Length: 237
Image 1 (cartoon, rainbow, N blue to C red):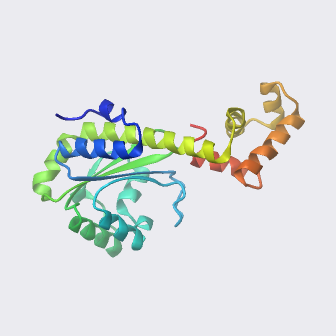
Image 2: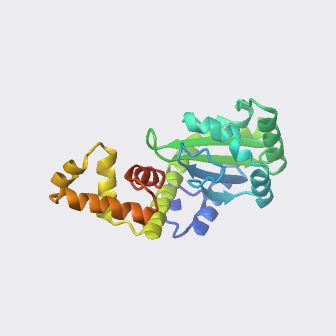
Image 3: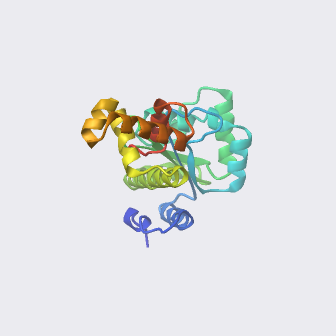
């Protein structure tokens, strides 16, 4: 029995979700998957905004990290600025390093590949669903294409799942209150301290004290840095 996207939303934790996604893609011919979400402004080696769901051979992930392929990954490069799914055989490859990455991926279960980007807003967190099979492209790529509507829906739901998890983790780790998050959202939309004071019916001095408290919780020197943190951790979604 094929699983629907709604079935996946019933997962109670990440481990169960990975198992359900693996079952769902395998019933449609894929053997492996990886889903990653990130903030599109994150080009850092630390990948602090990246979140992963791994449903493939661990050896492939180890090689991917050891070779730092995440810095030049053509799939990530494509997904940052495109929304349409793309077959592995159609991938634009610009460098020998990118070609090598795809060749090694083929050795570890991605002989046929399909990449499905997911975007929910112009500048917010994005997602990339990688699908793989050991079957040759002439056999598997038509099956990927036939299931494209399901895979696009799946990628969007996984992005929503990931965004919620990132947000909850950030709130738990920092102790930000809902009012403090609201203040950050107002600043992002262009409100001044005086505007915020009027909106919340508090004094400007109280607003500045809240700015300071937010900065202390996030360990940043300025409220602009707090806005950046909030954007990267989906607190203003």
